[in-house]
Image (cartoon, rainbow, N blue to C red; front, side):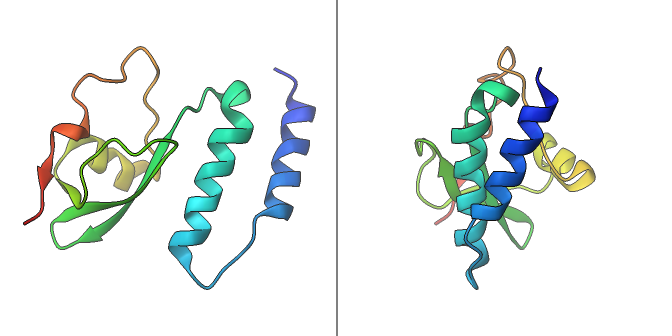
Length: 109
């Protein structure tokens, strides 16, 4: 991997991300850029943004293609959510995607 080129690309992206008073919009833009601009470098193919509501996390944005149902939520006890809380991110290698997915979670009423 060409780390020098990767860091230049990261710096360029950080400078161009529009900051907004709307945190969700800013996070969605960061997610879009990570997937679009670093797919080849880091193997990123998609991501989700969740918001904690009580004892669950509600999906707010999904990129590139929304697949989960509207108002999709998962309990805070779901293993990938626990990992997210502990580490700050969840990375699922391509070979594991699709197994035990959160898409099997719950819908809100």
